[in-house]
Image (tube, rainbow, N blue to C red; front, side, top):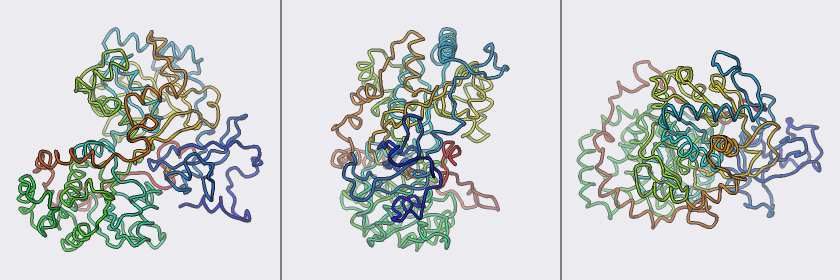
Length: 621
Ligand code: SF4
């Protein structure tokens, strides 16, 4: 899966990348160090481009003794997966939108036709202005993609909250990342990882659950495999079986495999908590806490047989895994989309957090929880406040002091109270409570299941604006479509899942006719009479840095993990108050016959694969 690396280092040129073959001479290319736009592993890579023709020709990685690189070899230490090496062609895809599209005569039943930027911006400003005057700010819903830069996401939520006056904003983090963010915040006070990639490679034990990590987050998968090679124990809890086709499959490398029933991750986690409590393997600082006694009573009521039936794993196997977890001085728990995207994802992560807390591995150096995210900037979107209940810098919309802090920077009052989530918004559109939708890189019709009735919602909306690289399923239903620039055509930052805020650098000018998202937002705001003007991404980065220290060069959290000692207070609070909250719901076992995969029914597991993720890779050869 890291075949691009072989091509790059082949000493005799026997292996060549066929994509740019005969397209260039090396001296024709300009090299730009930037960050991958696919998954949240956050790899550093180099775009080899021809700025004169605005073409990205090839992707290469840092390797060897290249000390000139601004980040050394990046968090990926010179490795890239196949998507990183070969998935760049969407930038110069002939299917890119290069002109705004509007409905002829403004009627939804007329075709989308090309228009000038002036006409399109005017049409958007007029449509938004009319709906705001007639129905007020709450008549707007706004959805963004977590693939956009922090700067564009920040500008988007500011536009929605200030210019449209709406609290209804959400993003693709709703597909699962918010479950992790909420649970992690409950447990440690922050939605961020405490362990770093280096601590994964140095761990004595890694527990991987709910992810096919080689497919979804291959570079973190490499860190896990490096630890296993060093001699770390590797427990893989997954319904996936061993494979003969690829040695790198995580189950093949595992020292213990808990082959549970599909969708039964929470049952496995409950079994581990029960085993730890009944073996008396609790950390001494928690053992006598009254909340822990209550938890012991709860798990004691569950029999090993019930756990086996719900999890589909022999209880002795779970006990053995729990023993290994307790014995490891440095243990990291990595979990992914099968948990994050499940209906009980939040509860499952809380149970996994309980396990770490009870065994003294939640805050301890070298240990901790590490949720994996699919899209490159999911943590960034969450921290930029592109969620209905959050504000930039992890503020809360229902917290007056957080709103005051933000309004001092924005010099405007902030709409109070939480807005609607993505699914609630789509329902509100169908019911006529929301009249207009603004989509920035998000494609609900193409991404959500039919049961969400996203297509019907877009049909029912009075006015839909879609801003994207391509004409998506949602764009085809919009009143105005605005062509956006890709990550290769703008400056900004992405925040990877580990919490590193990394630079995105412009390799080429925007493809003719396209504009960066933040610039489009600025122009619409100006047309609507609101001064939301920014000259470049750096001006936005500076404003973000005032609100969120992790985005301020040199500030706390900037290119580093949060200080564990500072999160200890939050973990104590969780132990004393949070541990017993929702305990019966969290530790309720669904009988096996109720599980999705029982009685001849299938359990559908969805997620990215090594060679495909979202609509960008669909546009790469
Ligand atoms: S897709 Fe993920 S693992 Fe692959 S190169 Fe990009 S950031 Fe790295």
